[in-house]
Length: 217
Image (tube, rainbow, N blue to C red):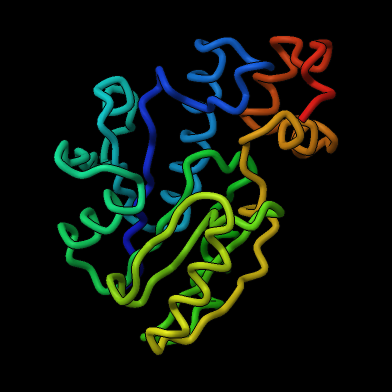
C-alpha cells in the first residue's frame, strides 16, 4: 500500500512568524495557502492520499474535494505530540509526514522519495539546509519520539537508528526548500523555476524583492 501523507498546517492567523518583517499577516496567510496548494497538487499527482492536520476552520475551508482534514486535539500541546497522536488515529503502516510550505514540491519528487525508502522498519528523511525535517516517511510510524523544530533532522535520524530502523537521507531537491525566512524567499526567487511556482509568482507580484527586509535574515 502507498503511504498516507500527513500535512500539518498552522492557523493562518499565526502563519510564518519568522517572515513577519518581510510580509504582512494577510500576505503570510496567502503564501501558506499557495504553498499548501502546490503540496496538495503534488500529493494528488503522485497518487497518494493527503490528510491535513489543523485546528483552523479557515484551512479546512480551502481544502480541495477529496482531501481529508483531521482536527488537532485541544488537550495536546506541540506539533510533535499532535503529529504522534494523528499517526495513532490514522493507524496506517506507512506514513509520510510532509511540510505544507514546500513551494517546489512535485508529484515526481514524492514518487522518487517513496521509491528511495528502504523496506519496513525504516525512516526516510528529506532535510533542508537548516537541519530540520521537511519530509519523513515512516515505515511504520510510532517507533520513536518525534522532535520537530530546529535541528530535528539529527534528532530524528538518531532516534530512528536507536529504535532499530534503517535510516535513509533521501536526495530530493524539490522537497528541500521550505519558506521560513527571508533567505528562503530569496533562494526561491533566485531561479526562473522558483519564480514560476505559485508561491514565487505571488511573492514577485506583491513586490517583495523591493522591500528592505528582503535582503535580511
